[in-house]
Length: 245
Ligand code: 13P
Image 1: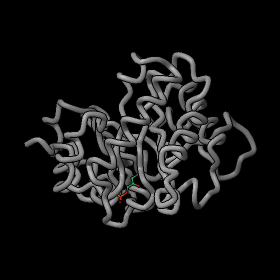
Image 2: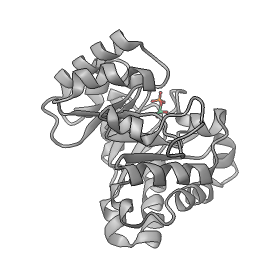
Image 3: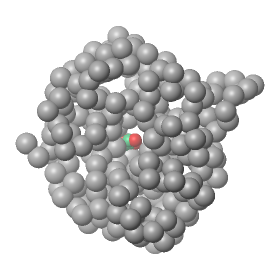
């Protein structure tokens, strides 16, 4: 269960939110819990979360190892701050920063090489869904992002986030989510075999809230949630993490 804090908060409010999240999810043993603050907030969040059950990671990572890449953040920098995870290929990066499927692949490989767990985001836009291209689009994204990852594949987490459901209040129905999750697992299976596919954690993202988390999580191939807006208060994020209570 991961909270993507996007470009919200500041050092003090991020630390306070992290503290409250850690308190509210400390008894959640059914899943891993992580938050993804913006890069400059990571040290403040790390100070609070180190030693707790809540992990943390970044919202993006450079595909490059090091060098003259102004504004970019390297895997090594993230590791030195204690990150376990990094989001890769979030739709807002694809849309606003023109990230391509092949760049998403390079970032995924870079994260794995450095020892970070990449949470690789895929999902179709509304026009693609309406044109009946959802599975085709997702297949291309998954196949490109995950090619030639070797043993690292077992550490990859996927997140299916239909773009039309992000921040809109429109959630995919559990059946719509399950259709794509099941398909993604089959694509991973054809690339890396059934054991890898069965072990892969596939998160759903897009307007997940405490009141819809349980029905989404009840689906066979929905293993967790990547939460945006509802991760910005500890009460609602914990309500999602603890959906079974
Ligand atoms: P919302 O939960 O605000 O729809 O955002 C989802 C998301 O983009 C998480 O990465």
